Image (cartoon, rainbow over all chains, first blue to last red; front, top):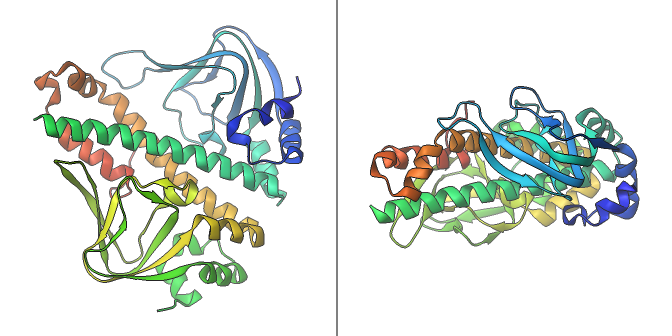
Length: 156
Length: 186
């Protein structure tokens, strides 16, 4: 599979030039994963960014909860996991495993750091993409929480 | 009121440490100094904003509002910055920030930051990383707390008052952390 052509179809990468996507594509590795493969574990550390090309990934959370295992969501082709691991190396909050067979392209954080050191436009554009996604995630969390708070306050 | 590089390094060391002398000169040139009067809103909850604000002087209060309710999140004072999300991804503000007295701010817009990026990619890349790390910390704390307090969230859906207990304080605490007004500990 030609990963850079695939990345062109992912909206988040729309700001990147074809040349940049080509370099990014060459830095990523495409791999087939079996059913139940654990991409990211709450018990471990995350240091790899994945783009799902085919199949589905289930996101779960189990640690430190009153409810046991919670299925958070299921992600399909075009989704990305492990974005945070490119910037910060914290213990993940969720686990991500294959739901059936999955084809994914991965970029280890070490490769991202190498790209970053080359002082080209690519890592900066990629960094901007990561930042935009984080900002969108942040807005979603704040909006959900404030909705919950203000609705609850008004109801009391 | 303009700011010298030395004064900027002293007041905003977190950003300044990513800047070489030439980069800092250009960063200061890219920022607009804005005088704000007491009672003026710098950002308005839900309205478009594309800027990062650095507080040179004065004090501002951050809050979110609905038709019936205002939740005060905290204050921004000299040396603080706010608007990290908006400079990364221009869009609706997640809170209103209102001056409680006369203030002086430095304003860096998303477009100015992108222009700076062409001149000093290493510096802006590092600043971007710093802002992204802040976002990650806040998203992580929110995710973790939301998961740990799942019963409360279910309580709202079920309208079960026993599960509501403590929710308001907890939610306010989390919103304050998300807006950078409380230290994050995981």
